[in-house]
Image: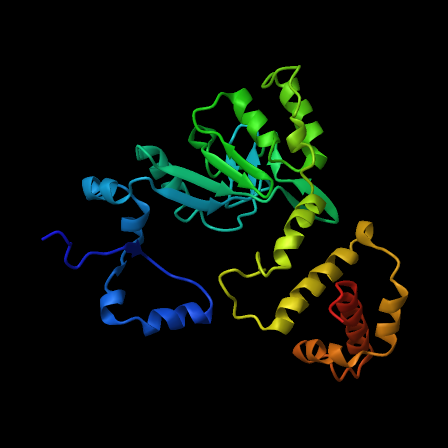
Length: 301
């Protein structure tokens, strides 16, 4: 016949998601469930072993992973920091990147946030160099930040530097370019194109605001087990963390002060979730005021 009997549409070694995702899997009938083949990590993560069949099954494969830092040479750190701290295992990331290069039409995509905040300071995640590597520069391929896509495979070092500069946060572009020029990795006359000179979070927010108003780009596009209160609390607590760092301190607005004096009724659900609705000790009252202030600062109350 023309149809494969007992065929699979996907091989997988684990699945993870919100409760609704598991409910969907549970409700599948037997014929649907049989199309999902749960198998060993060694089968999914490797090309070798039944390689001929796997090459046919993995045509035009796209392997998407996340990283922490990318250097201007195209090397990526994903599992640890240059001071020796290990944040996770390498997992299958190296295998998938190597597989993307082994397949004739495969591609590896590594997603990296352009910046991070640490100790009250903003740092670029695109660096001139970095003292830890998960994916070496000779396996460089596609790198994505919130500001764009850099296609690095088969490019010269100068082309790689230029492509990564265009997707870096603009607050760090000039210093990165200076470092690349000092090392002779890009021409002295090179200038970052104007189209990439406004890579700033404010511009992104401005671009996305009109779409978010239409319900697009939700915080959790694949769903979440968090309640509405917990989603708001996460935002408020992150804001509070930033405000407690010296460089982020600002004078509170009068409306925020008023809300900490007399707790608004609509703050109660958040206080109950944090077990602060009936503050009795001095510490509890202090924490309650801080939380109400944080909620007011993100316009949640």
